Image (cartoon, rainbow, N blue to C red; front, side):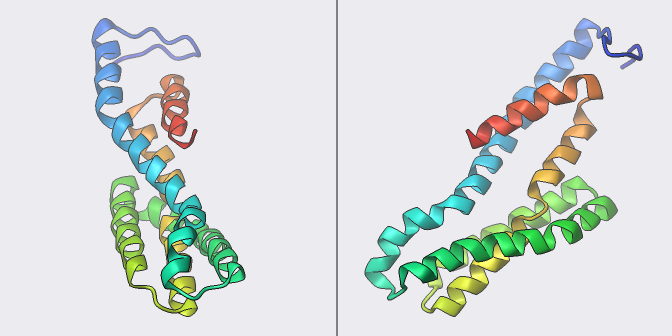
Length: 159
């Protein structure tokens, strides 16, 4: 694939077909993952309605659990990005999705506020490198002139 340098790169029909194929196969999966990540951040408010019936947590406990997610996210964003740089986007995203899925599934076993806080913190820690990992992954598939559209399409998952 040869392209001219500059902001208005000329692509052949084969190049355009390749970008379209990559977009059709890659972006829907990434959008679904982003929607799930977004839901993990905000679902505690919805889960609270059902959890209140079975767990004796106060409103403050739920609020702190929602906040502790972002503490884990904040503290592990840089380390996750360093791992991302060292081992690559594909392995990092696999690690993130695997650990994130286990912790999210473990939420069904929560019985105490301490367990709740720990799992919410871990969920934030494991999700920390997801967004930068996706952006790096998209750089592998799209040249800079086409990347903005791919990133914008990916980010529609949060709306």
